[in-house]
Length: 201
Ligand code: GRF
Image (cartoon, rainbow, N blue to C red):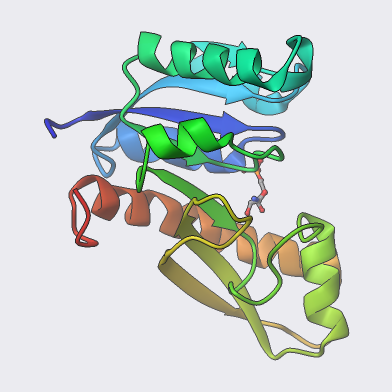
């Protein structure tokens, strides 16, 4: 695939991982042009980040459509319009429809704030993850970049980075430590995926 590839980033919130991808692309560390930001919420701060960078964005909510089929068709249409090659989920809180996963097989990534397969799956997001890690008295946590398949937090793990759990940690302090490594590994893993270095493509 010719570089840079066209990347869509899906968000639902603050978009600090979106920012790390924007920064990496600008610095030439990520061979991608971020052509579109898709947000499941109209009030996501990540939309403001896109605006500042002159990146097109759409608010996409499946519930705005009469039925799931029309919602999926519309999402596929938008992705085709922007000639999207890869999709990076960055704090996106909704499921990706099966038709989109099939169309972008091995080209959708997600970042998760724990060492998958531990602390993944339904209900394991945001502070719930860090609370669960602290409650289990684990000595370490970390971040995971993985491919997205039809099962939540399940696809092939591409990259992980560990951080220590420190005595006295709160979910917030642990989240902050993990987020820092998320910002480091997401662009790295994505770059390797784009270059076919995981045996893909
Ligand atoms: C991150 O912790 C990410 O791992 C999880 O959601 C959070 C998103 O943060 N999937 P941000 O919106 O990128 O700041």
